[in-house]
Length: 270
Ligand SMILES: [Zn+2]
Image (cartoon, helix red, strand yellow):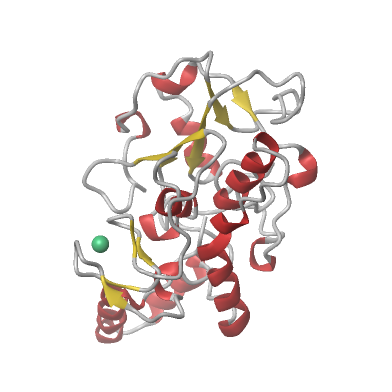
């Protein structure tokens, strides 16, 4: 595991950025029926699917709790599970914020979970039990931290998480299949080595679900991001963008920010 390389000032990532699936849908952009924001496949703020081709009503072999802390809604890939399998996924966000970068992790409102039935997907060390291993404690609910490495450590101090057992994915599945995430060394979601949160969720479902169930449909929006990156190339890192902003005249900067506010901005998936 390596530390997140983002800086506190930027609050961002040093990895190449890919467009959010909000803006990559082949079905075109349309306004969110709830907030009016122009989106592609879904609205990450309202958790509404806008792409009619997206899988809906998927079921998972366990109940998922996604804790979003330290990143924007648009960067979350665990959110994809909440969009496509809402009956089995509960999303926990900081109240009234689309970007939780500056929120106190202990302020995140969480229910009280039973440690006998709930585990946190977090690799604390080599001794953390692996999902699917006979030595792994049984659980029916899994808490997934949608956060970078540094912020996840802060979130784990939350009193509602302190007493829950930790589990991790087997090492052999902890490698992303998407090239833009490979080798960046940053922590994304529950597992290191660039594995995105939605990939971690799919792997956990495969390990815990019935034989023959693939759960690949959960990767629908993520594969759109992959296709977008292959077509357009990865965008600059957060640090590179921050440096470019410092050099740009104020007027040009304002124009760019207005374009991003219109939904034209891109964000990296988690
Ligand atoms: Zn919306």
